[in-house]
Length: 159
Length: 159
DNA sequence: TATTGTTATACTCTATAACTATA
DNA sequence: TATAGTTATAGAGTATAACAATA
Image (cartoon, rainbow over all chains, first blue to last red; front, side, top):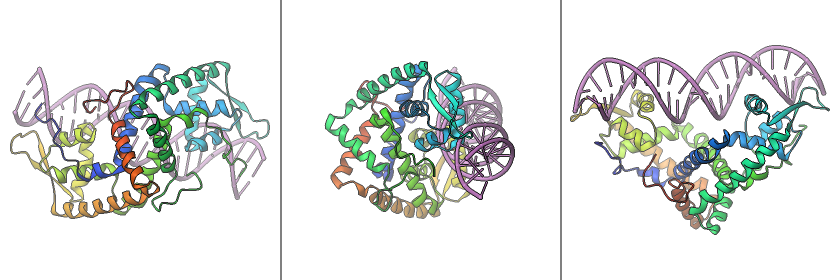
């Protein structure tokens, strides 16, 4: 190895909170995928859809897409995958023949219960580098940052 | 509007710190792009490369890629763009004829000085939803999370 | 043999437009 | 006319493999 890279000056990058936010998110996301989602052949996105459908049976694809912050066109492939794996079910909506109501299958509910438990366990373990008080404070700050704008006024609506 | 989506139950998602970390990062990233980088036709990735080359003149493409956490193949297109815009310069390395040493142009240094100032300003404004103490604490926690693993032991090396 | 810049390739996300069937 | 699901498409970002020149 001719260059270790250890002596590189990151300059302003290391003074930008957005840089650290992105670094922490990338590391967390990779860790979640490696140690947790590989075990169930899941991704955070698929987990989110399953969780929302499980808690809100009968939602349309568009409603789930809005909740996840995705376009409805992106939902098609996601629901296809989950339906092929027998975890989720498209049923014709009784009130609108354009819509398809989403429901968990019995297998899906059982599967998601296991994934959910494992997710909470990983959450506790990964964030163990923080004290309980720090952890609570971090979540509180992240929630504010998830809806704030550059003028300092929190957004009232999503997207 | 037939569905407001306001009454959706997010279940376990809202109990996972990784979810809030991702939400905060997405919102911050979009805000940075919209209110700051559009002004200079820059992205956070391009800004990072410029900052590192500016602070470490003469680095090779591979060294910059390692610093950014990217593969060296991804650097080609990035350096191409910055070189075409006259901000950066590839020079033959005096010590290794395989390598190309990267340097800022005079125009690039001037440009980056303006972008850097604007970035720091946006950083102050966007994170104004946090108190100064909170902000310091957030950065401290994010730095720890950027290198931590699920077993609670911080990594000693990057990637 | 190993490494540098490069090209090609592929896979995931994301965003947009347009089509059909319904409302 | 507007909306739901769908398809197609295009752009980023990311990852891998391979090649020629050089170490």
